[in-house]
Figure 1 (cartoon, helix red, strand yellow):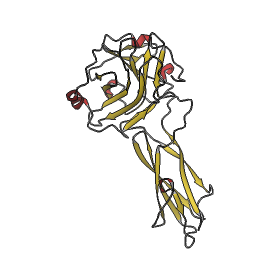
Figure 2 (cartoon, helix red, strand yellow):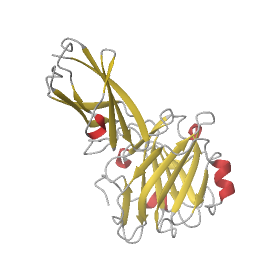
Figure 3 (cartoon, helix red, strand yellow):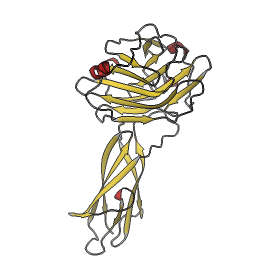
Figure 4 (cartoon, rainbow, N blue to C red):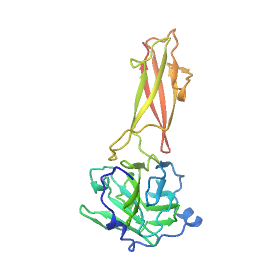
Length: 292
């Protein structure tokens, strides 16, 4: 379940006849349609929160900069086992939850996949309507569904928000991934776009000669995603540091606990590079401090 402000998706989920059938997963098809890069965007959702709907437990996204082809893979159990229990993928093509269909976290495009076929629709400001799908391929089964689409058919964008839903149209139960807001994928980053990092230092006044100094990333800033709880924290992190031209060896979590030399360090510049890992993306951020 989720805390999204949502409407029943019967309109989209019942329009499974137009675009085409869902192909059984085939290795040959996957090799032909898959972008050149391995999935870097890796996103998770809790298991067992689905009620009578299919249970979504993860998504991966990969993209090819050259062709602009994107591949979304939704994994879980009992996905799209009938046309009454479809799996939906919502794409906010401008990564802005305040445009598009704001009831669906700003989605501009949606896929609805049932057992016998799929639909692909575009939000026209009032309703979901037919949209071109020449580059679209949908294949998979109850444990994994893959949707391949070119960026040219989703607003020619390189940065999207997206979220998936398994919806039981009869029992009115659903499983959203994520439960709050949306995930983000940037073709340039091949994963979420991490704009900046909140950093906590101990002591807060900065490093002092002869004393320990610890830096901790406490939050990540991604494009707005409509989440009520917008705090994102790294899955892991590490640090490298130099005092002037001298490399300092850290300890503790991620080697981010530093011991500032007592002699000849006052007034020098401490440079710390903090590298964070989040949803398949690794990104480094440089910081500098003046030793007291």
